[in-house]
Image 1 (cartoon, rainbow, N blue to C red):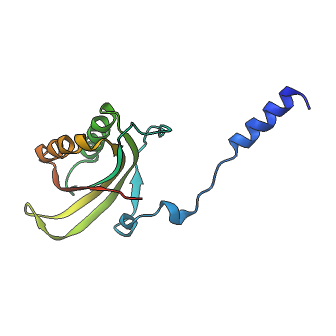
Image 2: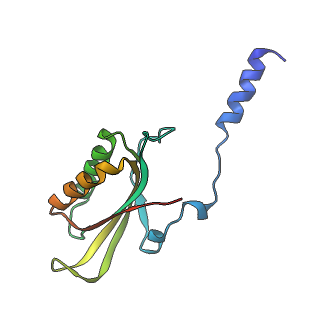
Image 3: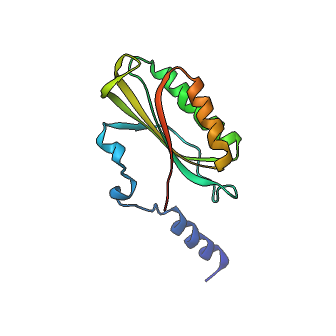
Amino acid sequence: MTEESRSGDTLEEQETPVETPESAVVTEVRDLAEETTAPVAPVKAEPAKGSRSYELIFVVDAGLAKEELDRITEKLQNFIETRQGIVQNIRVSDTRRLSYPIKKRTHGVYGVVNFWLRPDQITELERLIALDDRILRHLVIQVVG
């Protein structure tokens, strides 16, 4: 077999898409509503040394324009990536009725961001979120496992 045919076989093997079971991608947020996934840059092979996996869940007012919601997710993604973090996934749900009023709002849009970041940067991320009046509530949790 020549080198060309071997390299051709290798390319064909690499181009075959890897199928993952749907259940591996589903999280509890799927139960909230139909979701849209924002485009995210391809994940780097390895997160920065000392990084940990986190999940950010936030709620914004349902009356917020789609462009504003896109700006919020872009702002969060830029913050994480400029600090050597990796954004794995961003999901945004449809408008949902809140369990209880938050800042006199009864409906909201939930967003979930899965990312890798160094632990010393989480406080700064939470400060950035707290200063944004468009975000009604947020929660950052470390993903174990």
